[in-house]
Image (cartoon, rainbow, N blue to C red; front, top):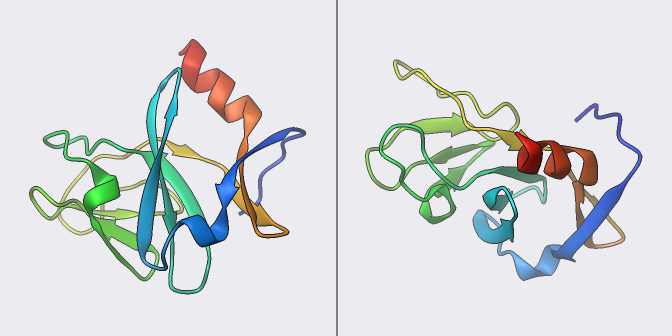
Amino acid sequence: MNVVTKDWVAIGDLSDIPRQGARVVKTDAGCIAVFRTVNDEVYALDDRCPHKGGPLSNGIVHGSSVTCPLHNWVFDLATGLAQGADEGAVLTTPAKVESGKILLAVDALASRAAG
């Protein structure tokens, strides 16, 4: 992910999330679902499907996508865009792993809270 940001905040260890799993981080701007792929890539998206509000953190992670548990909408974890015939998007937050710690971009979290 090509992200230009100066500040990152640690939200936990990579080992806190099972491969192909997710955990929820509560922020001032709502809940963010942090996903770990089978290749240990980490992505952060709003924990709410734009279709019916399903908790994406309860969805199925496959490849670099997640399927909503309510109505099977599929979202690209990197872009937040709905895949296939569905239309819509989920807000993403830049995330990365350094020394086993999961980090989220502070400026993105601040703009979410402001907006």
